[in-house]
Length: 230
Image (cartoon, rainbow, N blue to C red):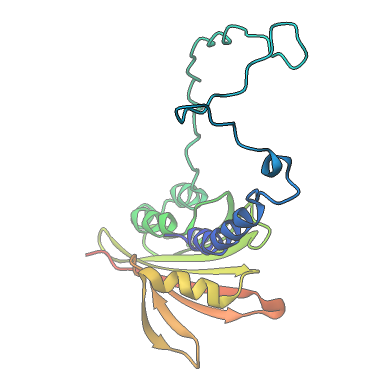
């Protein structure tokens, strides 16, 4: 799961109790001042049968004209809206640079991290693009007022013919408290270490997270992962 997905989970956990409380507060209650509360029940007829009050004749005051039910409109199925495939700008730049050996490793890393529109700036060896390291810096944009931007760094380098190791680091500032983010991460992850009071939490994909409190009660999530092809 990407960090954006973790933050969405934290948001849902906070909103659900609030909605439940608001729904209970808005439920209609019958009070002594309610006309429905003062209306006497229908009178019982002999034999214990309760008859409803007579309906006013057509044209009389209070009469409700009877009309045929509205015709059901013909059913229609909306045509599916095509979704444009996600453009991975890091892989495009690696292809244009000629860094073919590390493209698979770069793709595995970006699939873990990038899930939003982004811009990338990459650096590589012009003389030996397929034999030396490839590095890229990325800024992703999210439609969230509490976490609108994230920065990532990717690095990959060939280690043997046809093999490439990679490492990625993501920095994700958010306005949400670190305690909320930590609770969400620990539901599916595990604590590996403690760095001066800051737990290192590993998610099921193997990415490690450290949470740093920021000014104003927010949190900076630092995530890192290592790709070692077999």
